[in-house]
Length: 219
Image 1 (cartoon, rainbow, N blue to C red):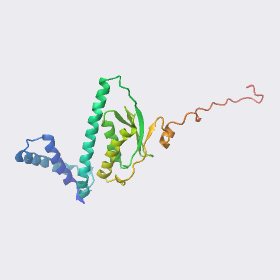
Image 2: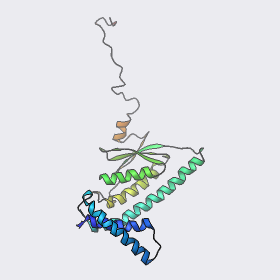
Image 3: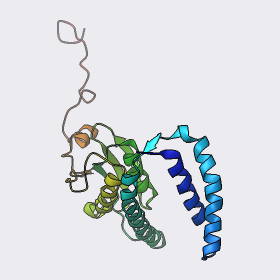
Image 4: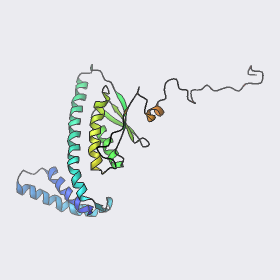
């Protein structure tokens, strides 16, 4: 295990290089990195109590490629979704088929679930409505749900990368749970609870019986 604050300080220095955007040359790049490290190490040390004391550095290094793939697939999906939403705005006659999809997740940690939920919301045309902790599932509203599998597939790709990034219990090779569309697919227990089948009588639907007298005419 490696102490977390030196790693955080080094990452701050690297991020500073990208934020500052120095000219591509040895001296400007090294100078920018040194400035970032000079600020990053003291800052990380001062705020070291805000994060874990140690970090599994080898595992974190192995997760870097998955994090890069996550970002790339998210950016690609965001660009495609942006073009689709823009086209719908410019061509309002194009039909929409909005749906709410219940997507059970394989990620289980708070950080993993939050990352997936925020990625969905940040993608134009989709919105995370709610999280069901019992089902470990997200309710997702999409502007075009004509092909639910096409909506869920990129989310599964993000989730596969997130399983490695956040060192989840499951692995990308584990099968993903089936999703459910609401309505009309109410086969999932959570959807049945959210919307009972038509014709099912609930307690609130039953007429209230009025108390009557012994002679049956209400007197």
